[in-house]
Length: 305
Image 1 (cartoon, helix red, strand yellow):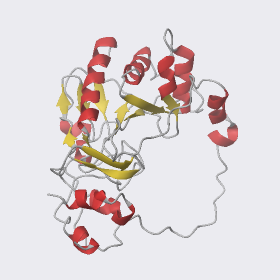
Image 2: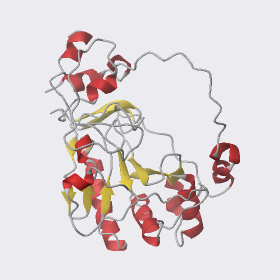
Image 3: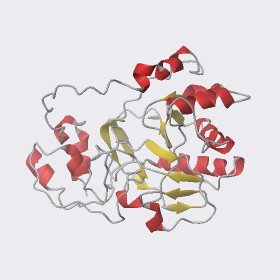
Image 4: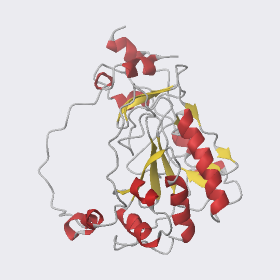
């Protein structure tokens, strides 16, 4: 089958995903993307972002977290005993079966070990993974999930409210510490996630990492998994590993140690916290990232029934 026919054949899948620059951007439930005429140069995100359902293929991650796709994904139920999916209208609540099991497992642990009733779940992956129209560079192979740093209430949140309610910003205005929304239960929730054996990374704002370094007691070995990264002020980005799967390219091992020393101090240099806002000279726009630039099997996943 030619690349053109592969691209055109997916146009039936007019999805309800969305996405701007942030993981909790508001989109109304049922938001759908308009039809489009595809060409071999159509960006891959435009095609994967319109797919409504997973394919019926084997359960696999193909490629890397920021350059790949997912086969045989499954949806996390929008409401469970210890979790609730936020922004369901974005249609980004799919993942590998191992990811689904991890979310269910750690949410139960959070409910048992903290005052939170469970976890509020943000973006996972699109039905077949792949690049998103906005909001994430990764989340492409069904092994990533954003978990909000807002306490889940005991009662079920109405679906309409899940599209508009915001998470809790726990980073102070000065960007060097946490604020009053940070509580011992926030720390407990992150610890419950990071201590799960399948979790390889937990990305948080550097100020959150600093608070964890200051407050964690007892066995601190789990701090090694918690890594500082910008853009995680109100959620933790949780990632599980490839599990030895040949079609999945693993990430590098984390740097040994707690990560609470000079490597953390780097993030609080003034030039890093407040970079020079001087406009840069406009650069030439890169060519579109097409399906052909993804791992070869992703075209078949996109085209599969």
